[in-house]
Length: 209
Image 1 (cartoon, one colour):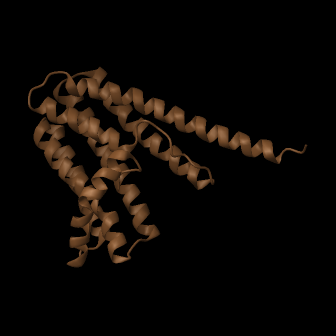
Image 2: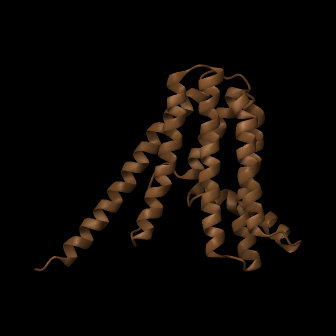
Image 3: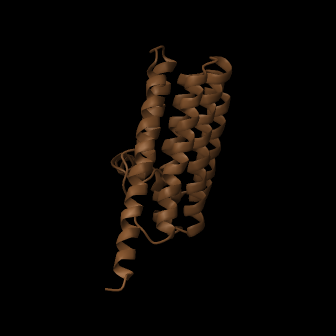
């Protein structure tokens, strides 16, 4: 599922009725998660990696929207589970990695552009770190709901860049990657700073007067 963000909330409301309808015909939420993840990975490597950027954008967008359904279905059927949450988060990480790895492959193998290959890899790494910092912070009991580049925003920027580049708009994907690199790095800093401040406040409270 897309992380908490205005974009995620909006699309979640739009697709909630579809998720509830699928749940009524017996489709399990975890099945939707797996299909969405595998579909994104295959579209990324078979289409984007081969230079079919617009087609790849369309197919990946479909599977990203499909990923919005699992939460609505789980709530509608009462099948919310810790396993489902972990499966969903794992699928998100794999999908994101596939998208940016395929872009990096296209720039490296098809375009022979080392700088933009580097930008795509930076987006991949920083996106994973952004999510990891939040998960690790919550694992030690701290809140980390900050950052200008949640997963939803990162995907929107990447997919818009892919789609426009695919229909012939020059340099738009290049700009999207460098923009994502910058805002993802800033988001990592925001989250680390938030965790540091909370941790420091807890230590200060424990010090003897």
